[in-house]
Image 1 (cartoon, one colour):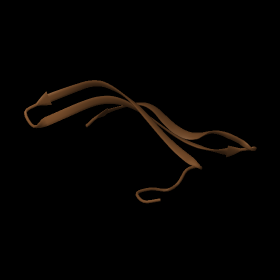
Image 2: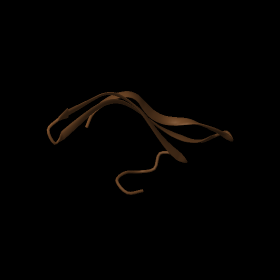
Image 3: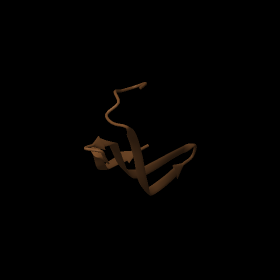
Image 4: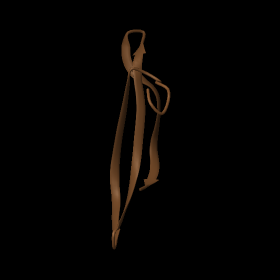
Length: 58
């Protein structure tokens, strides 16, 4: 996996945009990020690693 190691069967990312600012040619977006890895544990597809509510400015 480019850029990092694989932590499960499937990685899922979700986000919510809270604010967008435009200043000339620059656009700044403020959001909350959720990221989780899912895998099989005892035959059940379940979250195995993740982070939630990470504030991000891009």
